[in-house]
Image (tube, rainbow, N blue to C red; front, side, top):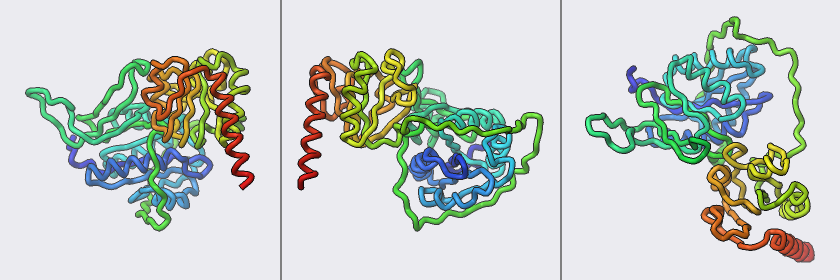
Length: 351
């Protein structure tokens, strides 16, 4: 394989109901940084049926080119036609790097594409960089430059692994939603639009979709929240989330979330879990109440703009990442904070 033939950072622009998903815009932001380091371009791969109108949005968030595969087989997500389409793009355009979101769709699609084009895949990455491999030179072994270095938690989050794919192209990774940041939207940006015929052909791996049932969640997606008031094992039971955390979150215009302990021990809904096995969040304010700060939880929230931690254990790891820490009984502290917020809101209302 001639690695020099492979150029560009490609992003699978996931769309649902003909609307580009937020994870695609996050990936474009990271792709731009990677492409700058490589001296290459950012290309979005947009698949669907009657989907071309979404290409401009991808341009506004950083795509230099948008490859559009518009076909009736792609109207609803199905593994086989989507795998065929992206594999055809890879064979034709030879990208150096291909990124997918670690969503339900991305986790299904990316390994199928990797197997089809015979390359490696690193799943659930939390960090992507361009650098040398091996990272530490090994006597007698060639050091390869400008490699994609993919970092992800390993062994249940107890260690961090950095992985490379030095011998095959493209270098492929899935990235957890909420980890990367979107670029500021530039409504004046333009991208080259390429209509691509992937020559999709039905085979015995195609499925027939009989019906699509949309589930309406009772919970607001915590990844979209600007403020999160999050509880852990220190909350003691589910009722205390409603008694103590909910009033504070409502006053602040935020949402309640939880560590894994709250989900496993108190029955907090899984949709509200922050952490390695939950969701990665990046709110403007994250208030951690009774959360010790295990590495699995920190991986999901440490990029928050401002972190306030409340814990009676002054040695709790959560204080290592917190901007402000309060040591004490959360059942005494949270009502005081709630009262202070109420008073500040009342003052503003009077002005």
